[in-house]
Amino acid sequence: MARKSRKKKIGVSPGSLIYVGDKTDEPVKISVITYNEHQASDAAEVSVDELLHDKNGESVTWINVSGIHKMEVIEKIGKRFHLHPLLLEDIVNTQHRAKIDDYEDYLFAVLKMIFWEPDSGQLQFEHVCIILGSGFLISFQEREGDVFESVRERIQKGKGRIRKSGAGYLAYTLVDTIVDHYFLVLEQLGDEIEGLQQEALERPTQKTLAAIHAARHQVVYLRKSIWPMREMINSLLRGESGLIEGYVLIYLQDVYDHVIQVIDTIETYRDLLAGILECYMSTVSLKMNETMKVLTVMATLFIPLTFFAGVYGMNFRFMPELEWQYGYPVFWAVAAAVFVSMVIWFKTRKWL
Image 1 (cartoon, rainbow, N blue to C red):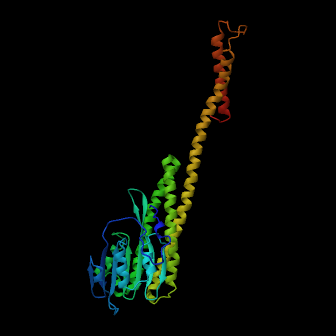
Image 2: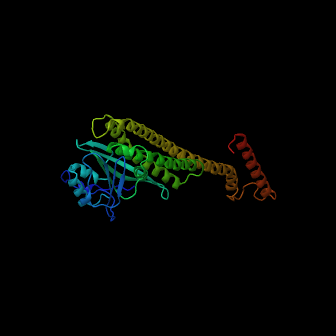
Image 3: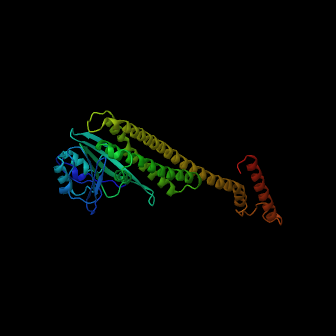
């Protein structure tokens, strides 16, 4: 989850295509699925020049672009579908927050697809853009691999109502799939937080503190990525665009409810991590106090013995008992009596 520099965008003119994201040499792959109520066709690798969609509205064309780091490809797609330059600029900026823009002929939405990396215990965020037009939908992703496989399967096998519906329903389906995947990620993150809570209570170390701060950083970034989606879905629910069919609004309301649940869960995790941090500090402080208590008691027990040894270690010529034959055993008897008396006193005071 590294920060991506935006220095190279400073001072350039609006609409300039400058990629802001992780460097990669992977090729850009374009896949196309065209379907209607009766049939569906799938083309795995298509060039920009081959991109077409049914302008008569009899079929829905879903174009998926995996890779947004090649500006020439993005420019060609923009020219082919007459996309606004500012829209193309947002596509190649992976730091953009979730939002939706209405360009009259098409809707443009920015979302974040989130994955959990079990090996590193880190969240991975992927920039996703969706362009919804009349009879077509174009999705852009940073890299190959997504959470849309179930949607592709439903289209190919004709499951549910997706093949009987228009492009607006397809857009809802993609957004709903992304949001549903948030719950899986939150569940995995919740397990990680629960483990941190147990560790903070039982065996806190510096590694535990670092893990707590890392988890807090991830939750903050997660909140920053998902919170704007509430307003984005709410804008769609207003029904101001004719590209979203009326019957789709009830499904979008369900997605809105899910987004609210996700945000509430994130807020709960944030509060929980704050509590875990306080618990860690309290546990460490308690253990330190216990250690200091033991050291203080031990030092206190030996203070009288140190005093006796110091006095009779001065070796003045006329000190009493220096030449007494029972002086040494009497010293130890007195020292032992003082030591035992102090231990008994400490126990009565419940300091031991």
